[in-house]
Amino acid sequence: MNVCKLFFAVVFLLGAMLVARPAYSQAARTSCTASQQAAVECFVANAVATDLTKPRYGMTLAEFESYGVAVSQILQTHHTYLVLVGVSSAVADAMPPTNADGTSNQTAQENAVTQTVAAATHLGLASLPTGTTLTDLEHFSIDITNAMNDNNGVLELLTPGISLRIIDSYIVTATSKGTVNWSEVNSKLSSAVANYISSGLMKVPSGMTATQVTSFADALAQVIYNYKVATHRTALSAN
Image (cartoon, helix red, strand yellow):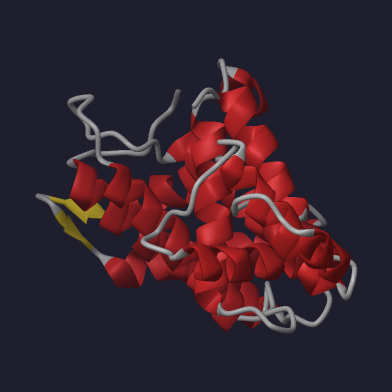
């Protein structure tokens, strides 16, 4: 599926989700207006029937419909939605689904996404909308990342992964003979975050503390390290 079709699918899988069923009776069509959940499930149900998308992540049709409802809830949060899109664009830019030798490694990228989303949720940068789970947020972010992987060089221009590369630079300089001095990494990240905040280059999100922001940076450093080990990279992609 090309990026336009996938992103179209994701956005509607973002706004009302996708899945499909055979033709509905008039009674079934009427039930689609019973609630927002029913409306999303019906929309999703028709998307698979018309080959716009299909269930993934091992989901049954019913589970994919539930995922569609979860995505509609995520989109209505605005704040969490923006965080997840930000995570996805940064990962797609700096941590492509390939090894250092160019071979495919989708798992490494997906693990980077899920680990980052889990950290963001745990530390309060993102929240779980009503009726959603952490897995829903992770799947949503993976869907967006997959859509952004094929971007015709746009991400190279926008460089949304710059913050990940900055964090990686601390890992690189604190690495000797393949071993990372994590005390040094964490100390430098703490100082960097404090300097960014005091200089006005970074603002602490509402509801979070500077300590939580630093903890998120530390978590990202671990995500980056795990990705580099999995892909045999010495540094993040510079595009």
